[in-house]
Amino acid sequence: MDYIINPVMMGGIIKEVKDDKVKIHLHGRLGVITVPTKLIKTDNILEMGHVLEFYFSYIQVMEDPYEYDSSDILYEEMQPCLLGGKITQVNDTAIEVAIMDGLGTIAVPRRWAFTTVVLEENQDVEFYLSHMRVIGKKEITLARA
Image (cartoon, rainbow, N blue to C red; front, side, top):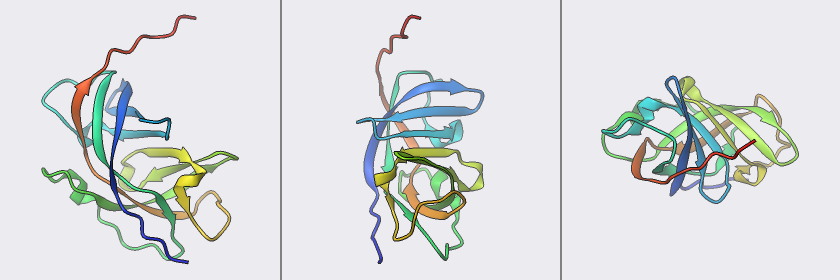
């Protein structure tokens, strides 16, 4: 069974900046993406609350993965880049994927993964992702203990 995974414009908000990594919560409680700061285009210092836009797609399990090239993700123009990865975690509700070339991780609900086989750790996957652009800022209040 073949699926066509089409990239769509998505949004998220930075929840954490630590060293050279940024944790982004996708709008609509659709998951969490962690990427290096080099994938976020901005003239500002990245901080919690920055709102981002980028291209992203569903994730497809691949039995015979391609030879993917992640260099396109750094182009100046925002365009979807077909990337590969490996499933690192599977549970009842979600999967986590390590993005190729050390570009971070993606944690999304299981329904975001197209497959005809049972989801398992170490499976090869592919998906579209672009670099990200800061489009605004929201004030985030931290919960008190």
